Image 1 (cartoon, rainbow, N blue to C red):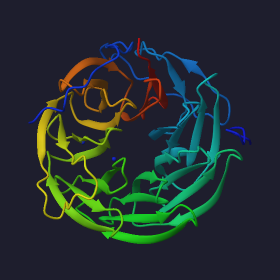
Image 2 (cartoon, rainbow, N blue to C red):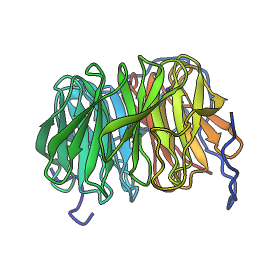
Image 3 (cartoon, helix red, strand yellow):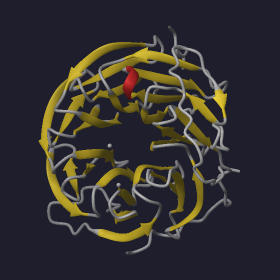
Length: 352
């Protein structure tokens, strides 16, 4: 099946920025009143509003977890854990295609030219490489024990993969699709992000209450930063000034100020949490928009999405996003896509 054309597992305040205009996200906050489980899809798509979810949803089925949007915002990629599948949503018409991958996919990332998607297969200890134009897996790469998240940094041809029970990060050369390194980190690494300059990768260790900072070029841990309890995901704003970490056990987000100059010696530099932002109950999924103005936080315990104004460090909107929400990805225009595991859906929250 052709999915697209060939062309195309949680204080100093951030620096204020000049805005072109404030935005609000049009999702609604409502109480949970019922369970609506979506049927598994096998190719087609459906746009609907669940019985207790007033926001638009796309049915994908199969316990959706990780989610990514391609750079042009035309496709959303969703790891369907129970169905061993990668769902691909066409954002123009909300049709859903399905690609068979490895066992229990958890995380997904797309390279900047949208040619390949990388999918972590949690029960298979591998990463599937998907040809997005052909809609098929072209390679499977063995990694560590129970891979969860993956991030791609194209300039140096690397992908970093967290191995939850391996307590390591696998490094993949995305040019030849080979495993080229393994980096020991803290206990139960979950999320991973690379700074925009490609110098350091930041890994949340949910069992160590810390973030490991890996020197991308030496593939060694340069620093360990203590954060809140049970950190889940990490995101870095595109301007490279701040790292955000969701602390599942503390109901907040840690903000780490990052060095802005190239060549900083993080082995000896001071790096710590500069701010904490209260959010909802049990925050997990996390993303920052392309202009660095907003951070999006998925709160598993109250089934909401918090939107943070990064300049003021405050929550500016809260939206209900379905039963057992997990992760979030943000398109170039600011639309947020949130996976809801129990519903088998992706909730769509658009800026107004």
